[in-house]
Length: 201
Image (cartoon, rainbow, N blue to C red; front, side, top):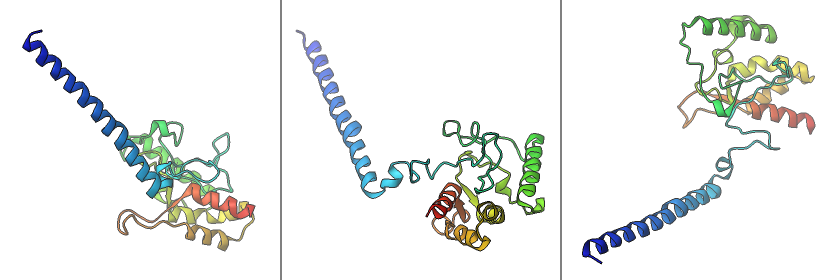
């Protein structure tokens, strides 16, 4: 066997051993380490932030409508979603329509009129997040203003005092990220589950 062949075989052997070692260390060891740290320090987040009773994830919005797509009056409504047929995790994305696009302008006007009629308010009182989808189409949050706008309808549908429903909404307000980023918000699915649990108690 020539020295060139021996050198080639030795180099190939070193490369194969290095690949196996690095695969074990980085592909298996690192993955197990990061997964273990996640499960130890942040188990809920590491497992998808699942809602109690296997009712979805707190990180992905949900629609609270009937089979015909009509809003269920006893539930707080989410913002619109442009992800697939609505809150489809496999089709995350916005509509990509500009603010002056005629289709978007017409959709916003239609949503605003529909929400105003449902909530019994003037269209000017309808918050922007009630009529526009988020960039991902999966945002599980609505503004505090939109949640408070829905209190009278939800309270009437559930035969509960408005003050009680309003207090529940205010107790679910999530602050700004890091204390200064974004706006105060409310997770709609968590709020609706809290309402269901309250009535079931």
